Structure formats: C-alpha cells, structure tokens
Length: 315
Length: 315
Image 1 (tube, rainbow over the protein chains, first blue to last red):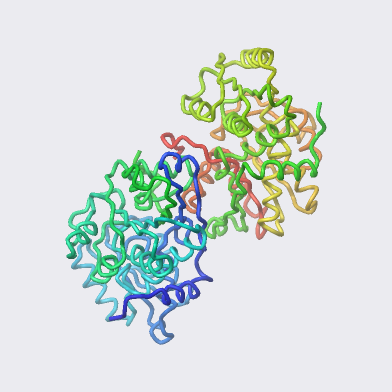
Image 2 (cartoon, one colour):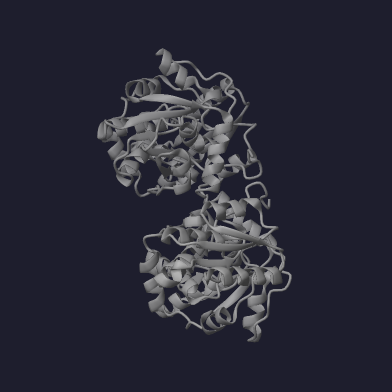
C-alpha cells in the first residue's frame, strides 16, 4: 500500500500534470459577497478539463506509472467525472483505459467516456457486479486500477487545486472543499496544512449524505448508507485513507440541507454566471447556512465541477 | 452632436473606466473548437459588472461628464442591461440616475435597477410614451440623456472590450461581435480597424432581426420592424451613427436562425460552462451556421452578456 501523499508529492503532481490540465481561474462576485457577508474566492474547477477537478488526480495517476505498468493500461469503475478524467489522461499518454460502468448509467455519460477513447465494460448496477467485473478486466488486461479517491496519486493530484488557490487568492482565512469520498478534501487538507497552517479548513457536506460528518465526530468510519442528495458527486463513503487524512487536518465539517444547496447553485449561476453542478455549490451553501460564522472572512471555496443535466435543473 | 469616437477616445475610455469594470477573461474550449473547426477565443463579458458589456459604455459616459453636468444626474429609457449599467455607474459617481421603464417590464429588472439606487419612472409600453416621459424627466431634472448606443461616449466604452481582446488573444484572424443597435459592434470596429486592420470584423445578427444585415447590404438604414428572436438584446435598430461606423469598417454581417442560436447557447453552457444570454450566443451560432468559412482561423467572439431567466430556458 502506497504511503499517504505529502506536500512534496503534491508539488511534484503540479509539475507532472501542468501541461495537461488548466490552471483554473479564481472568480469573485460582489453581489454574492454582500449576501454572504464575507469575501469569497471561487476556484473554478468547473472550468477544468472534463469539467471537474477529477482531471487533476486521474492525470497525475496516469503519468506517475512506470512505462512498463502503463503499457497494460489503467482501469476503474465509475459512471462519473473520474471515468472521463481517467479516459482522457490515458489517451494523452497513449495507453488503454478500461472503464466498468453500470448498465444503468446515462447514455450521455457513456458517450463522454467513449469519446475520450476508453473501452467500456458494462455490468449490473450492483456493488458486487462492479467489483467482479473490474477484477475480470484487471485479470485479463493487467491494467492498473486507479480508484476514484482511495489512491495517494489521485489525492496528490487533487491537492494541486488548493496549491493554485493559495497563490491566486492570498491571505485567506478559510478554505472550503466539498466532501464526498474525500479525495479533494484530503488533497486540500495536506496542501493547506503544510503551506499555511493558520488557515481553517472546513469540509462541506450534504446533510442527506453526512457520513463524513458523523465519522469525524465519532472518530470511526461510517459508510454512506442510502444517501439522497441532489449533490450526486458526494454520495460515496470515505476510505480508511481519506478518513485518516481528514481526521488529522480538517477543522471540521459543515452539513447543509438540500434547499440551501439549490439556492447556492442558483446564486452561482444567476449572480456570478458560474455554471456549477450541485455538488460544487455545497461549500457556498455551507456559508449561507451559517450566517455570522464567516463574517468578514476571506474564504476560498473549491467549485468542484460543472457537469449538469441542462434538461433537468432543480428549480 | 458629438463626433464619432476614435481609437484615442477608446484608449481614454479604457483608462477612465478601468477602476470600475472588470478586465474580463478570455476563455477557450477544446470541444467547441473541434465542432467549429476553428480556434475560438471567447471574451467573457457575461462576467462583466452587471453581467454585460453595457457596464463599459455607461461607465465611460457617466465619468466623461463635467462636474456641472454630472450634478444634475443622468437619464435613459431602457428595460435591460443598459439601465442597470447606467444606474450602477451613476451610483459610483454619486449622482442621480433617472430610468424610464415601461410598466410592462419584468419585476426582476425593475428590482435590479432600483437595487443600484436609480429612480424609476414608469410609462406606458409605447415608443411615444417612452419619449414624452423621458423628455419630462429631463425637463424637470436637467439630467443628461445617455442613449443605450447612439452616443459616442457609450460607443467608446464598448470598444474597450475589443481593446482587451486583442491583447489577450494575439494573432486573431477574425473578430465577431453580435449586432443589435450597433454600439458594441461600432466600438469593436473602430478598435480593430485602427489597431489591426488585417483582421476581418464580422457582425452576427439573428435572421429574425436582420435590419443591420439588410441596411448594410442596401446601403440605407432600415428600422427593425417586429423582430421576433430569442436574442432579446438584439431587437433594436441601428442609428445613423452606428450605421455610418459599421458601413465604413465592418467586413460583413452573418445572420443565423433561432435553432442555431439556441444550439450555440447550449454548447457554451454545456461544454464550456459559460453561462451566456441568447444574444451572446449569436456569434458562435454564426460560426456553426457557416461550416468551412472559418476553418482553421483564430476567431475572437464577444460574449455580450449573461443575464438570463433561469426559470425559462429555451431547451
């Protein structure tokens, strides 16, 4: 098992992925600041390649492989942004990407992954089918499994977003990533703790998928059970690794209800013209849901992605 | 009557408005480039203050006034982005803004203008009522009328967007603004003709509001009659002034149908995560509607604004 990543790994990742991903802009919006009572700095990973921060971790993982391992390709199970990000990164390195997707995945998601040249293997939409199908793909191809978040190379890649944010928005008081499986939150925690230990790091999580909040509160890892949130990028459970990293460095987790997530998403679209997916609106929702707590602070929020279904908006 | 603006006026405007407006970013999108067969550079005026390039012209006009004239305030008739932009600029200078709006204007638009501190006078939704009401306001207050586009100070301000674009995206072959009343297109034409006369300047206009296209084709100014387009920022007619400037410098105008405007708008939202209003999608629509014509070219498109009704999207 590979060690947890350090700030040196994150710096190395930044150099490694630099040619392949965007240094995304940091946006501000006076009218949202007025509502929030704070100075907010939005790190726009919705403008990242494949429309999400996932491009960072997947690209770092793919370009970290030895030539020998790379020759057999990479594989993963995902129906979301990680699959597209891994497919794209593999294409850039000229190696195969094998993606196991549930047969229930949306056609548009399959098309996106196939569009990056990945080989898709469908499976029944159960955890068991997913794992046995992935194992069969690995057995047959020798491809390296790149987990969506329980992988130090992936976490190091995700940490590069915060590395840029600290350069782009100086003198922050708070940094706030959303928390799903904990890959982005772990990378953010490692970066910020190492470089500016005085900054508070608050995770933001839907109340309807609050496994990370409860896990950190009780000091034991709870799985995510039947999460029911519009923030569909934040449904997964922490892993032992991300639980350990977050327990060691996160200031805390704030949970938010669905209505506030939708309100935050709409504010970002309407006032800031920043098109984010619901998961990416969760940090702003956490600010709105806690009036007074961040008054006058300079807060960096990581807007994790922008892949939405424009035919099915939540308002 | 004031003279038509020159490149020197546009440079002066850039210095004058610099502290009050954003230098908006220029975005690119690999997947839209692949569809278009060209390298597209999107000047993101949707991220401008008040959500549209109109902030530039209105701010330049307000800060161009002598102290004596400014003391009486400014006035205009508009129910759109110009009204909000003028209200904001007047607030920044600490002078009154009187806005004549039709009683039929959307409540949200009235609220936006009132939110910037403007004084709203309602009138019947007819041209005659608008003009008599405005004349009465002027008579009573002595405010300076700032036309939405038939004003050299406004045109000079709008020209600053192209000034930035030429710096941000070097070696363009084509620059393409949308054409409504012609303020943005005129400012763009003056800037690009003066600084890089080798660049083609194509206006983009809805086929359902093609008065500028017909006017330039026939060499005489036609008014816009019953325009019926989703691009509601492009309904107005050219003025003598904007007709003269465009006749002297524009390479030509391309017209596009409604379905292509909607397709272009959705591509910008979905692929580039750039939230634009329909009018701002018209230049991209012109590229899509003319396959082959811009193959391999470097094209700068001015995305004019991002103020949409999120409850009433066109798809």
